[in-house]
Length: 105
Image (cartoon, rainbow, N blue to C red; front, side, top):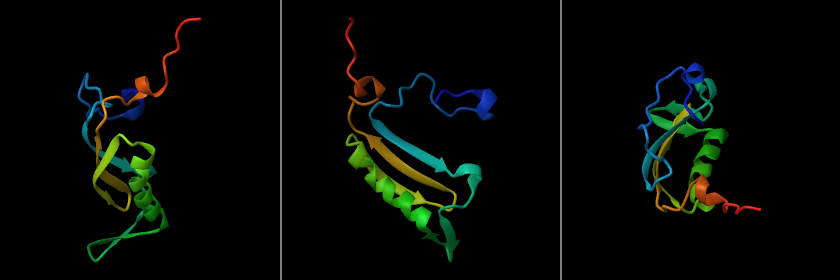
């Protein structure tokens, strides 16, 4: 999705001109809609996952099954967001490599 300040109302932290499908490690954050605490709660300094938090946790570990060029590093589920580090390890990924280019008629 292209950053549009009229819609997003926040500045982009993306590095201009950087191709984010390149191999490398990336820190990602995914927030719930309206930052609602949908994944569980903090009790005695421990995150207690509810059923949705468990789903988020399980799906994280399935990423390499669906994307073999991705390796997982640290990951944590918080009440209203997740943080994780992924590493793209294959240079031949991204939309330009997903579908063979059609040659002319």
